[in-house]
Amino acid sequence: MPSKSGRPMASEEVRVEVTRVLDEHGRAAERLDVPAAAEMFAEDARMMLPGMATIEGRERIAELMAEAWQAVKPVRIQFSTEEVYGLGEMAVTVGSYHFVLHPADAEPTEDKGRFMLLWAQDEVGAWRVVRDVTNSSIPSS
Image 1 (cartoon, rainbow, N blue to C red):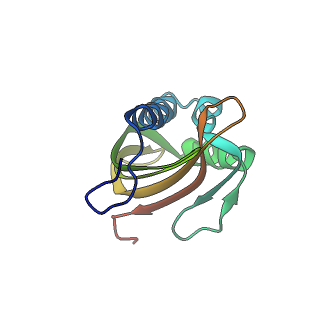
Image 2: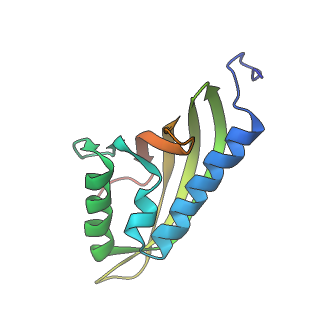
Image 3: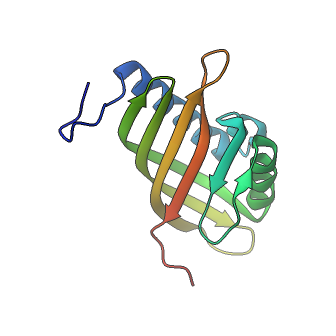
């Protein structure tokens, strides 16, 4: 079904499923469960974060999460999916995030920003992120 702009919107089924997977990822992060959080990503996923080289592959993304979460524990992870576009066996989501993070040596802090995720169905039909582009709205210090 096209949106007001004429771009094809994803079916409700796709919208519900990718939102569920993203929410599951957030809950896994809050539990510091790296393997469960990494399941959202395809084996060949690429993560593009500000100020960093592209992180390639689910295994490397999991390593990055484990390293980061030792220094800064995710306390509350919230995603708001605002747009979902269907592309057959692929989908694009656009939204925002709000994280409460607790550095090991400081008071909790917040990060807010935007994301665009490219999803693809794997060989068993599960939706996985193949590209993750995330940008914080908090000015870097």
